[in-house]
Amino acid sequence: MAEDILVRRIPQRVHLWIDEERQRRKMTKREFVVSVLEEACDADVQLSLPLTTPPSVDSNRNLPFTFIDLFAGIGGFRIPLESIGGRCIFSSEKDTHAQKTYRAWFGNTPENEDITNMSAAEIPDHDVLAAGFPCQPFSIAGVSKKKSLGRAHGFKCETQGTLFFNVASIIEVKRPPIVLLENVKNLQSHDGGNTWRVIRETLEGLDYKVFSKVIDAVHYVPQHRERIYIICFDKRVFGNNPPFEFPSLPPIENRPTLREILEDAPERRYTLSDHLWRYLQEYAERHRAKGNGFGFGLADLDGVTRTLSARYYKDGSEILIPQRRKNPRRLTPRECARLMGFPDSLPIVVSDTQAYRQFGNAIVPKVAEAVVRQVSFLLSWQLTKHTNGCLLKREIANA
Image 1 (cartoon, one colour):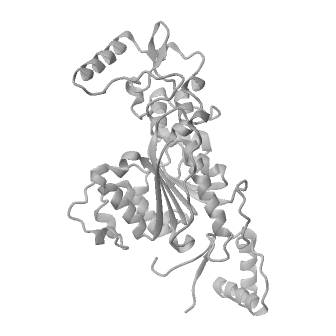
Image 2 (spheres, rainbow, N blue to C red; image 1 turned 90 degrees about the vertical axis):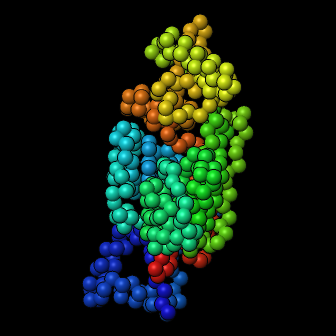
């Protein structure tokens, strides 16, 4: 039985040549392409097509690929993906303030605000799907494992009302060779581990090899920030056991200290008022009396901070900067950007409140870059194989 192949990203000049020749020969596009391949096969011609010539594995070389940026936020995934040769062809972000930052940083507003309002078929074909998806609580009580692994949206029952289902639907329809997901560390323990079980089994049920690891950003920035990275490879492209490894973490002592990212002369408005400082101290004392650790956190300037959260705009209590003969102060928005690893060249174009929210919700680009570079190495490895490369992929019926 004849097999179909799907060739993505054909150069425009090749498209034009195909159209001219097929019209001259009075053939359909499919008939013409098949005839050319059959002629080459019969003549034993050694083809040298741009997409089928495998490159050598070179860690310094960036391979071109396309990606989509879902739940894009302010582009924590887009920055590292572009740095290794990726081209963003679709993005989605619902928050209007994040859209403003995204437009200022990348020159375009996300094409779609809410992927829940569009069908997966509307999204362009892509090589990599990246999503820092929100994970909302859900219950799996009474739902069988068989349904959770069903191919015809059988897992919808378990993820009803969650945004992960929308991501899974896109993966099922578009079948990107690589999927990159990021979420909070507690994803693994939520609902007694059932949330993570459903997510993992759903991805595996779609025929992807799943790798996951919790990485603390403290190896790259002066902040403890543990996040789970989930990397998935289409088994129909990479096989059952692709040789992927998460990056080796650099020594913690090589990352900057908190002191190094602080501004020299922050504005006075970032210093806590007497009223707020007194409230935070009394609040902490009440909880100490109850035997728990709730309260503010005075940061060690020569060390690292707690995790920056999206609620930092409220009082800044989790990361306070001590000052001589003054009340402590909040981090400035620029310092928060630096704490997350965003360069000063990227402007802050929203209010302080929105900036705190955006940086508190963001992906640390340096961590994501270390991960996606490992993905790039595997992409290069795959293209050196003389079988079923990523850019020349068999289509499987009813996939």
